Length: 398
Image (tube, rainbow, N blue to C red):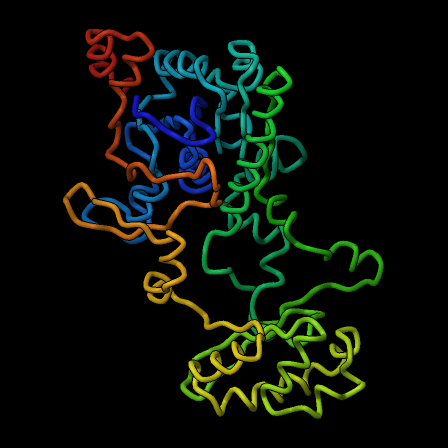
């Protein structure tokens, strides 16, 4: 077994999942030292063929499956299920994103696994959660985003609801899964508690970051709508076009920053206007303020506008594409762009590791590997002989 450093060193995580939510969660745990063993079918995780490819492998795969040991097991076969139960008896955490009830049919549900290993933590990610009237429906990140509220509030008011550009619903579920796994591990390791189910819903993970939309509706009957680049209820905070057809985000949120911003754009009259002294009254005049800022930004290049606002200590930034990110000095200084070697010897840039820990930082030790790369080694650790492994291979169990 490869040596792993980090705060989760000594913790074994088994992933039975595909695509985004469960694999991203276990990836984070692996970046901080957990021994992550990903179980795939003989056909492999569909993510291996998703999005942009290099050769016959998805570039996303190399990132999503880094630091993981990979084994193939036919979960539908009795012998494959025995292998997984034997593996889980050695594990601290199981992360899965099957539809509720699917693992139970394979003899791998909570009741069966808790009996085998009372300390095992089972992190279950699904569309709607393990309970409730919708529990059995198929659910993907896009549906979680729709029902969780973020799609309704994303985009311009004159356009249909929009996606954010990434699978944010899955990623939010992954982060909640990691939080739940770590809290459950703390309960086991520091309080000698038993394992438990961490029930993560895609819908609820999105809903959990939706700020104050519920009390706003409950108390005021207000439904937050799409506002494009504006930050509702905060003025000024918007996206403005520059003379070189670029876009700049300017956030003059606080009263002091607002004054500095108005002076910087040559509108001292607005800085001193009693109507605009605080945010609660500025929002009543946001069209007038936005027009003043937009008029100024259209006379400046992006570089010039950023320099002037930096000098005035006003938060502002260009809108980055991937091309901007990979060459940005701040990203590079923070080790947020790492370079690794692909199986064919080529180099690839990949995202760095978060969060940054001063004493026990995370790391990328290897990229996602070929299907079943570690099957034989893991089975050997579980006590299977070379003959046993050969028979399992002949029967297509692995």
